[in-house]
Image (cartoon, rainbow, N blue to C red; front, side, top):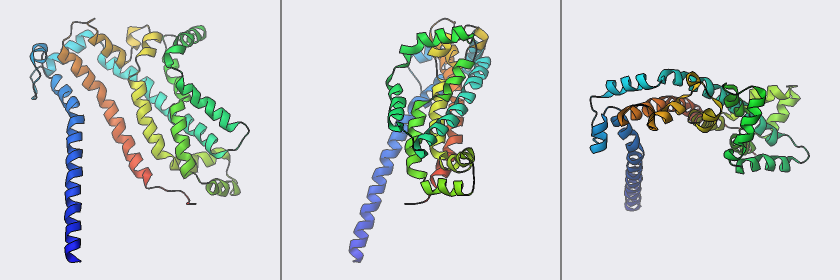
Length: 283
């Protein structure tokens, strides 16, 4: 028995080493492009063109000066935050509210209505962009941030994922107990559903933040003033050759644009991990 346990323990350790080795290799592969981009932000154009190097250069400040002379980078940062933060908050709240309604309530044609919501995910955004522009033009919303923000209230992908999660964790007895205590429907949603749905809301908020932060087509179509351009449009203009900047400056601008994404991921990941330890009532 001792020999058997010793062999089992040895095989288990070998298996763990094998798994961790694969994970380390995959981590290096995933992190390498980011590392090369960080290094590229410190190099000059000639070094990048002639062949990449794996250690930092001395052209970081020069690349930053090139960007400052070419585009209003920090104004673009501010514009992107003014668009992305409200968009993400609206998407999180209204998607959770809609998903909660589909999960908890029973009403006629519910399956067909939810199927229609999912069917809208199959329609490419490009097909409705002309009608969307014409609609915003008639309402006087062109060259404003409002049409880029308000679309967060209708996020079918978030509705779908939050609804699937709610079906698993929101037990009917929780809702019925709150109704017996004479809580209103909105009170039930805010005090019971939202805390339980925190992990999936945080997960979808990461995707929605990245989606809005990197959105390029809608700002190009709806924003005409240079001082209102978000960061994604400014970076695209840098890489288009419109401004006299080198590859190092472009790498630096992209690197700076990733910082908010990393921060929002770090913040939301805490809620994901803590939320996974929360439970509902078992069947």
